[in-house]
Image (cartoon, rainbow, N blue to C red; front, side, top):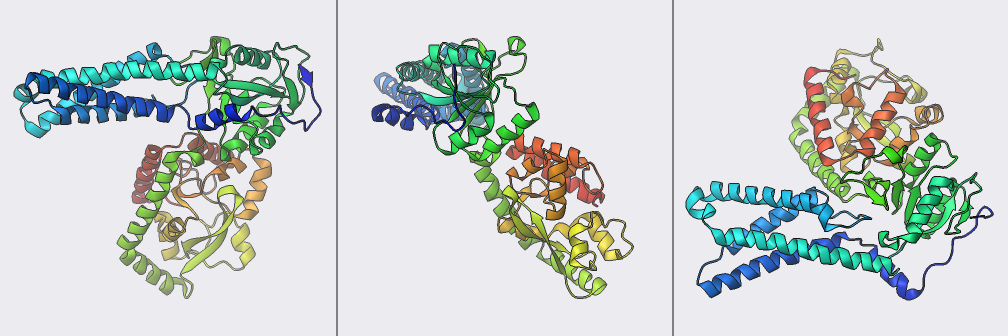
Length: 479
């Protein structure tokens, strides 16, 4: 293993022919597996039609197609289309059989609800049963063929994703040796990143091309798309910040878990020649589901503004009569990627100066609050104008609450994980807020809850937060 000078470049890309295969493989195994599964449904349905025609029997092709589509949905929910290092039909068989049985049960239930003729129309309908079996068998066979093709392409170097290994110690060298000796995993190691590498020799002879902080430089240049995080001399909290900085880039991150010798490998983990690897989830902001979140934001905020228009008008009148002109209160906040925007609220208190507005932490106990202002803050109705912020894209319905620049600059230096909150758009409500973390509560706790939300985001998590927020508003638990 050679130690290179800082800023060294990686070995050159492969030749044009191989690079073409690599570019094609960037779509991953997902479209290949999905296409093969669709083909299995076609084979099952067409085969059933041919047999039915030969026997003079009407084949239940529509039921078979419905069963096949339900089967595909269940496989997708089970993660059977995700990219994996180890591809084995035997490993997948329990999941495939389980989802096949679930799809058959759903199809049976749907037929009972539709026709209300369970025994006459379904259980004795052997043609449907054999069609479902044919789809299942064809799917297993085609997946075995597809897996064999992928492994062959990887083994011959036609699909080989250039990979950096963070950590040039004994574990990092072990990772490099495994990936070099077993190209069927599709990861081609090209170098180490380590500020203080151990003087060990790897059979691969890979160079140390920089420190872990250089990983963004290599990702931005397009030199690598995969990074394996082994054990390095870098502090763990610094490594967490570095990994989070990769969120905006199209890169696959694998982590060798601590005490990996004792780590149990489950269906959601990868392994390379007996070495467990945790594939980090695709960052929230780059996932396909995040686009759905934005559509939901636009639809819900737009409809809410229409539905709540009378209530908004009444609140505006109350604010006007209680405190005079100036119904809306605008305040600069920090949103996604540190961008500033003007958040909108119903005015509950008129600040004496702009500086007071920007630097006063909490006005919940301010003696200048009138009855209307106290009511608006207690019920959180003062936040409703932020529906306009959501509609125009400044915010989301759910996300970390935006803070003022004055406090962001303070919290950023005092709490290392605080800056990571800005990886996603801020929200009208959030995971920290529904746990009571608002007002004079721990900033460290808020940052931890917000980052938990980002790392574990799902559409269902957003639904849970919205439902809990509605409960808080009904109870009058606002600030």
